[in-house]
Image (cartoon, rainbow, N blue to C red):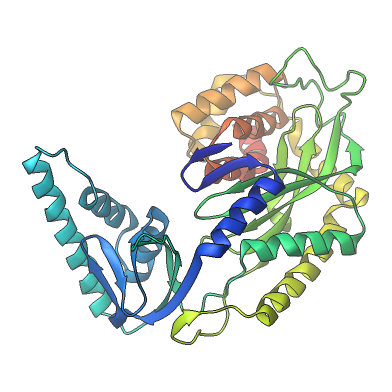
Length: 384
């Protein structure tokens, strides 16, 4: 499902591959010194190469590199690029004011540094390209295509069968969620009293809906500087498709390499092959470790030890958890709803309510953040 421009949530691997192919054909990267970057009318000119319209993601990375508060640079740029009505002279004056403010702010910061930057873009064919990110010239690209190739290679080397549960893609990150139906454990204690919150008439103990947790993992990558390539365990609860992420066991490969030469960057086939081989081996090792019934059972045992705390004050406990993890009022209400429908009035039920609500969330970034705090939230619920 598409939620907004450049954002795809819960798509298939084939749909993801189509989108990545389209983006790869248009992708262009440049390494340039600050002296060859210039803000003009809210756009960024790359001397001798291109003119780009910075996306919100690029504005965020510009703010980080140029020591400009992220919220401020995004707000100024948004006002600078507003399109007033034809007869709105005041609106045009305000937009012009903010364009000057944006240009002056960015150009002053660029003039104050002699650093080089990698600017990642998409060619639009319309004169102005799409600015993806402004990164360090030491940024090591691990592109999303490479991650998919590594996933396929790693799974084949590990000799297991996996199912792709869903894929997310936006300007910041790509995520692949995979499960392994052949590796599972019965989790009667962890799921004791739990009903499917999406269909409360179904419990975890009906025939064909036993309290099963499948092994699995999640792969994550950012082409725009918002995190490392990583593989981490993600277990799937059969009856509701909730995903439990074990963040303590994440395997990561950071995007830091040697400084790139100035100019347009062309990635050779040999370079891409080396990257795929490296992360393919890392993926193989992660898959072999995570998709193992002994590892899964040990992990579920640890979860079960946290899951049995009785929740008597339902609203109070959810309120404490919401405050601890900065949930919005809407998120708190959604989690409370899933908690009640799940019928599991324990600390384990809190985790399951959070991961169930994560399925309702259309923003892939926020959904991933919710899944990541579900296990720690059990500890918070125990102490509430």
